Image (cartoon, chains in turn cyan, green):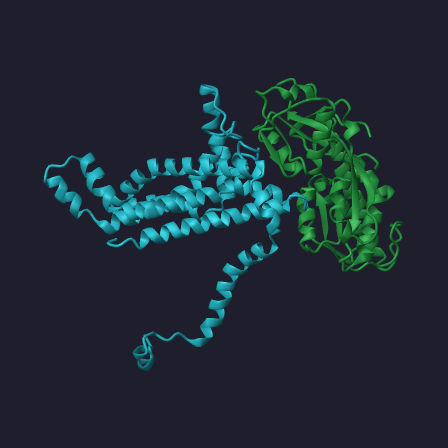
Length: 274
Length: 270
């Protein structure tokens, strides 16, 4: 664009100096709240708060449900991404838009929608109860469904992007050499998209771990059954001071988990040869 | 205050709505014909101006909406911000973090004590409330008392233990040696009521006033509920920019007229 040749010679495209101000503000907006959390924490009491029975129950439930939701997302998400990537452009466009809708929708809306579909009086929930005696609300299964609902779009988008970038060249060659469809899928398609698949899986897991709104409305808030980390934080924080320390400690724990996830993502992205 | 039967509610609500209308139109007429003096109101003479921000327990949703409406008609110079209704402890947390409230009405004294350092003077008790079991209309599961709720097949929703309605529930359950495993613990009483209204929960422990305020659930009385009565205090925040308005509102809530409104919604005297 209007790059200054002198600056280019110095090794960078100059940006207007004025833009540093909003850039710094934006950076501060993202980073300073975390500083606030760290400063506010009552550090000597953080370890005790983290290993309290309630916190451990919430952490165990969160890991268990988020892993289950991630597995569910992989089982249905990879095939869905494949179908979208291999569809004609119009159908793919419609499918992609509908798949990403939960991504741009407030999770609370998702929770209400899930309740009206799978609740006792919901379209499907009523049938489930009558036919099989299954009630989903207030169960751990409901948490997994809520988490999958919000996490699945992340996985599908990542995998579908990887599929489209990879193209179908190698798959066509493998097929002409006599490989069956399953063999092509297992031996060619999956290995090709592995980096995208891993990134999508990690993102989906992170999203599932942080899920709050849909869980709160659809699954409820019972310790050990549906009270995941975010719900435990919300419940503790609103305990009028008495339990705020543990809310902060649990929040710090989730921040650490988030940082670990980011580091994992980075190490995969920078793996040589990808 | 006799407890409301579900059948009488429709008529009662009509009467209540009508009385508010009459009261409001009367005040509006008075305001038109005589703009200076407020001859109709005896509780707060003089002109009040400024804004009023009220934080009130979720169980006060209907009654405080009406009280604020009447107060607003009494004092046209006062701008009442939309009331923040939520679990008392949630509101106390927000107030502790600097939320700009003038008046705080909590559902129990323990929660009010957590913000006592921020209050201007002592809080004033203004109402009492006790628990009832909210069940679906017609009580299809024939729930007759607290002991029935320990049935593990029942989906029972209660308030979290540190929220006033949850504290009352735990006091009652402990006293009567009843163990129940809640399907969910909510952070305010209206969230409990919603689960029953949606028929996702079979029963919920809510206040008498919550059941009086809705036609969509039925209440089952709890024996000994009065032993775990909640006393509702109202306090004025030290940081209030309009302490005169805040005091006038508090005085109105504890006045006879305020008490009549609260009684209509099933609240008792403090």
